[in-house]
Image 1: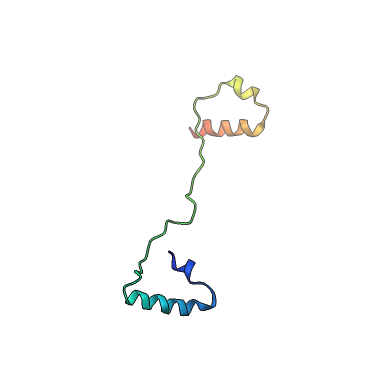
Image 2: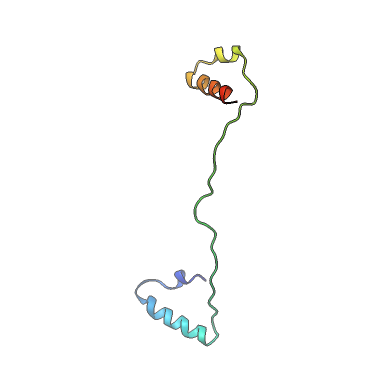
Length: 77
């Protein structure tokens, strides 16, 4: 059981002394465990141009941002 779950509040000092005594008597064993990281993994969202769109595809796009993204990806290669 994690010590933080057991030892809380004003009686922390008293409980730690009691735990230390039980450890010395070899009734309890104290150990340290490495917990997994709490931060979320970092992910990067990417896009990749699958095929060069033809002129008809570019001219049929009404959204200027979509057209701009496609043109940027075509230039970037």
